[in-house]
Image 1 (cartoon, one colour):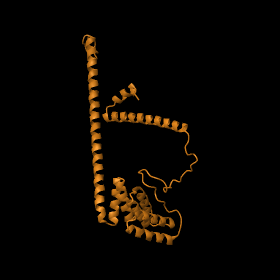
Image 2 (cartoon, rainbow, N blue to C red):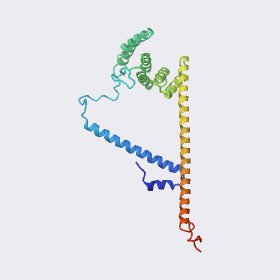
Image 3 (tube, rainbow, N blue to C red):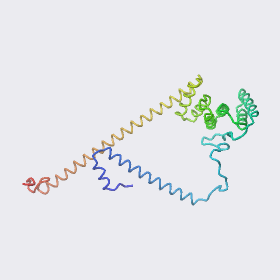
Image 4 (cartoon, rainbow, N blue to C red):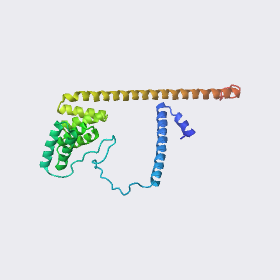
Length: 266
């Protein structure tokens, strides 16, 4: 989108170079927004023209995590508790899960933890233990979800915080991982978490340094742009003065005076 000449002239008449840059940047953003809106309109028209697929499929509840895949290609999320009060069954399943965990049979342990979750209202500890099993099975997103449920029940669960921190480390959510692992260490220090916490802290520092460098580079870019604008204005002003002087000489007078070189007003 070309900026009208009179608008450009108005911008360059502003004395503050930074104000000029702000206006120019704003115009650029408006242009990008307009282009984006045009693209969205085109997409909507295409979607309206296209035939609807799977129209007969029932709408799924917003919280129906079980049976759905997720963006990093994990297996389906295990189901959450909905109803039930068979605490005897839940207790039996938790004991079986603990035995299977001790034998390193994580798939079977996960099944028993899930049976316990569905049998009766689970505790934060049960969700945290199932999250650990999920982590052992390389399912960090599902583990993170279970830890979220555990922390709703007990915000100070060190096990849930620690496990969620490790899941977020795998997911490269560095700042969130650092927050969770730091909080877990404050509640219940674990020597085995020290290296993980150091790693995510180093990653966070690396990101912060990169962001700081980006800010410095952007400030330098703006300074250079401001300098270029000032130099262009000075050059334009000088050129205009030279043109005016040349015209005056060509007409046999002085700038602002009468023909023949006599000052105006004499």
